[in-house]
Each structure stands twice: as C-alpha cells, then as structure tokens.
Length: 237
Image 1 (cartoon, one colour):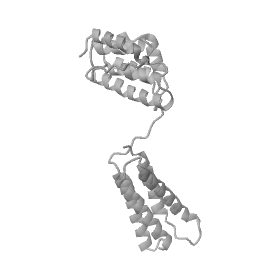
Image 2 (tube, one colour; image 1 turned 45 degrees about the horizontal axis):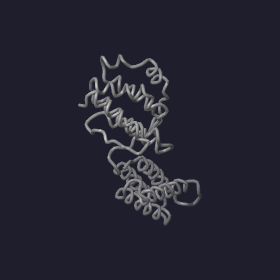
Image 3 (cartoon, rainbow, N blue to C red; image 1 turned 135 degrees about the horizontal axis):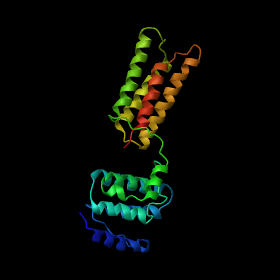
Image 4 (spheres, rainbow, N blue to C red; image 1 turned 90 degrees about the vertical axis):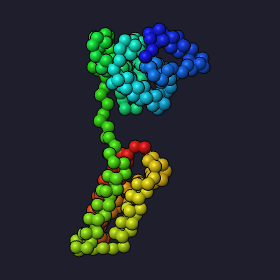
C-alpha cells in the first residue's frame, strides 16, 4: 500500500504529462486512476468515452476492494482537483459520480468526508439507460433457439401443417449455415457479422412468407431465427 507521500510524488510527476512525460504508476496501488483521468481529459469523442469507461471500472474495483486513508485520499484528490469534471463514459455514467460512490463504499469514517457538492452531483447524475446484458452460455443459446425453430418447422412439414417446398428447404439450409458460422466465428469479426446479417434476412423473409398466398410459410424457422439473431447480436467478445 502506498503512503500519502507517494500520492503527492505521483501528483507532482503527473503535472508535465502534456509535455510528453508519462510516469508509470505502481500497479498495486490506486495511483493508475490519476493517469487514466488525465488521459481521458486530453482525449475527445469516442476515445474519451472509452478511457472514461476504463476509469469507471477501476474506480468501482477500488471501491469494492475497500481500503483506508490512502484510498480515501486518492478519491478526494481526484474529486477536489476537478480531474473528473465532464468525464462521461460510453454507458452515460459520470466518472465524478462513480468516484463519489466508490468513496462512500469505503464506509466509516471516510464516507462522512464526502463534500456536499459531490453528493449533490451524485444525486443529480443521470441514470444510464438499462443495457441488455449478453446472454450466458456463449453461442449456445442462439444455436439452441435456431435449431429448435428448424426442428419445429420440420415437424410442421411432416404433419402437413405446412406444405414442404424448395423455398423452405433453402431457408433451412441458409439458417443452419448462419447458425454454424455464428457458433465458430469470433464475435465482431467480418465473418460473424456476415452470418448475423444472413440469419436476420433469411429469417425475416421466412416469416414474411405468411403474407404471400400459395407460398409455403417458414414462419416457425423465421421467428426462431430472428430470436437467435437477437441473442447472437448481444454476445460480446
């Protein structure tokens, strides 16, 4: 754990960053957040939001780990120096509000030291919109839904509820191909995005067959394929 004197030394070393120096803070202390804060303030646009997101993750982690005087002083110096003013991450979270929450998480007596204006900022900080979490299980939820829908489409054909046809067979083959690629390809790669687009288009067309007279309707595979595409789109690398 770094002493308060180490914090002062880091702050002194951080001042000439704009002139090209980039000190490397100890990785076992809260000091890296100073470097991240300064990098974020110098950045613009999406890069600033990305750095602010990384900073928020670090602030939350430090608050969750708990700590003592050193951590509390680190949060205070970030807040009092205005280092976090205007920093908002890609999720819409204010870095200043996150720092206040992390300081409060340190508990007594450090939570009592939060300045009224910082508490007011936390109270008035906009609450980010609810973000859909990626489904657990990697590619398997999308694969299970897609294959289940294809199986239902086959059952409908065997029972005579839907007359089999060349379009239905083509829809099934393309859906199976897209699901296979989504299972093995890296998330976010061109191949993954292409398979996702193929599954979405094929499933949408299959669902739309219901509206076309005298054309076998692949509504089951289409509906399941759209759900599978949605689950695949939520995945993260």
